[in-house]
Each structure stands twice: as C-alpha cells, then as structure tokens.
Length: 445
Image 1 (tube, rainbow, N blue to C red):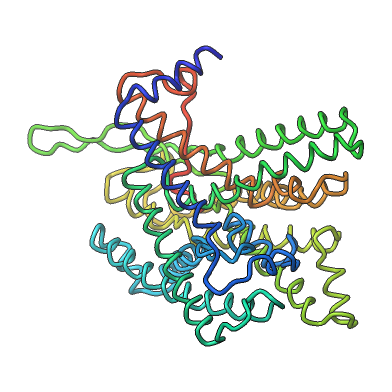
Image 2 (cartoon, rainbow, N blue to C red):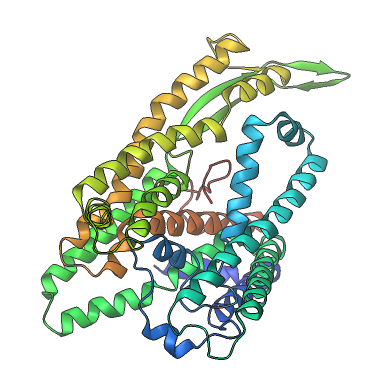
C-alpha cells in the first residue's frame, strides 16, 4: 500500500504529467457542466416530472452513454455519440470501398483526410439526431415551454445540440493532445461513472431500510469485484505469435535478426459487438411504446423485455455473430502477412504470404470464440443480477457496455501514466515485470 501511495506521489512530481492530468480533469468537469445546462425553450420542471425512456429502451441506452444529458435535455444531450457513429461508418466503408482503403494506406495524409471526413460526418449525424430529439421533446407533454414557436424551437435545438456535440469532439481531441488518455473514450467514461455514486446511494438506502440484508450486500459487492477482475483479465488476454526477422546488411549496418511477436487479443472487437446487438434489440422495445395495449405491442414488450429469457438468448447469439463480424473488419490477416513479408519477417515453420495469412486467420478464428462467449456472458449478466433484487442502476455496472468501457478506458489511461513514470526513471504503478497493457489496436473505444 505504501508503494502504491509513493507511486501516486511520483505522478505529481513530474510537472508535465501533473499538468496533463489537471488539464484532463478540467475538461471533464466542463463536459459534466454542459450535461446540466438545459436547452433554450425547455420547461425543466415539466420535463423531469414526465417519465422518459427507461433503461430498457433505446433512449435509456443513449442516456447512459451521455451521462444523463439526454434526460436533462442539455446542450450536450447528444454527447459524443454522433462522432462515434461517424467513425464507425468511415471504418466500415474502409473495409468495402476502395477509395477509403486507399486513404488508409496513404499514411499521415490519408489519416488527415479521414479525420476531416469523420468531422464532416459528425456534423451531419449530429444534425439528424438533434432534429429527432427536437421532435421527441415537442411530443413530450409539457416539455417545451408555453408560447415557444415550434419552428424556432426546432432550429434552436438543432443548432445548440450540434454545436454542443462539436464542442465535445473538440474537447476530446484537446484531451488526447494535451491531456492524458484518449479524450473521446474518457468523455464516454465520465458519463457512465457519473451514474455510479447514485447507484451506490440507492443500494445503501436499500440496506438502511431493511430491504437488503447486510450479509447479502457484502456477498454482492464481493461478486461485483470478482466480475471486474474477470473483465480485466479477459481484456488484457493476448495470444502471442512469434515473428522472426531475417538479417539484412545495408551499407555497413546489419538490420533484423530479432524475434518479436504479434499480440492477438482475445477480445479484438472490444465493446462494439454489444453496442451493435443492443442497439438492434432495443428497437422492438421502443416500437412497443408506439403500440400500447395491443397484441403486437404486448408481444414485443414481453419477449424483448430486459429480464426475459428470450431476450438474453437472442442477445447472446447476436453478440457472438457481431464479434466475428467486427473482428473480421478490424483485423485483416492478409495485410499483416503482406507487411511482414515486405519487412523480411516470417513466422517460424510457416511460409510467407498466403500461408502466413491463413495461419493468422486460423488462430484469430479460434481465439475469437472464447472472446465472443466472454462478451455474451458479460452482456447478459446485469439481467440475471437484477433477479437478485439489485436496483437496475447498480445492476448495469455488473457487466454490459458500462463495465467494459470503464475497465478498458481505465486501463488505457493508467498505461499512459505508467509510460510517463517509467520514462522518467520512476517506478510504475505495477510491480516490476507487471506492466499495464492498453488496448492499442483493439476494436473498442
């Protein structure tokens, strides 16, 4: 414990690292402030009195990512999700459209063009989502203040929400450049973590009121810590493929002759399969709200209920499918094999070129299965925990998107802090030989 305390003291002995951490904290505080500034023309009292989309609807999912800003009808109500959506669209286009594939191989110039396209796409996606949110608020009884022109409210809401999204994107880029960690990921991270204190308070109130036994609560927290440890283990898990580089003599210097490895992650797809599957499965639940008291609406509401067995089975199957789908997009064995061949590298016992690509693809297929099963278990775990009487706000942190993002972003940020410490001859946050690995090259946030 004393060693860990000393490590944290060392963080603030490094002036650059201290400035980066303080800058990051300041930016995240600004993000949380914007999540509580209500849009013009909103009657906040009437809005809070009306029940919005629950946690088992697409609106509840979106509100979780933006840290309650959607429920508050705040200027940051769209969060950073339009940027994420635009990035995913560009990434998918890079897998099927030759023009985008060419840009990805052009180095820094191509990266700048892709970044600019992503920003432009963010504006378009944000404007479309802002229009939908404006209509949603107008249809919410009493949410819009009396006397406000519908046209003025629509225009002002679209402008404010789009500008808020672009401001958050800029803040995220500034954190990445001048702060610590990945700015976009940290913005999503802080939005999810902001709900954790309320979840703890709700559980404490359940214990104090006698609805939960203190022993059961202790066991519940021990189980929660075990789930977190399991997620960390699987997130860090890799399969190393040895690569031998042949010696090359250029002039008077000898290059190569070393043995390295390709780190193949068990969870290459990150949290994306859960987001894809969850977004699709929340559509029937949302549609059920438009057909109340009908056979069709009741069937959708019951079968796709968050706690139903049918929902959990379909959810798990879709996650396995999307894990393989997204892994195939995020990691191309042929590109890896071609790069190795150009650099004079080869896998011992495997011929360069197509045989190497097939060998890597075979390993990727095998290690993706346990990763897919891991994601499926983590995704459906909150539904089973809720059967134990755990409040839904707290149950969300037992798995699913919330826990995966929290663990992944925390590991990435700690890995950067560790790098700053070790570069300046300070002991890292972990014991010697136990370095923290980030998720570089993974398909997650």
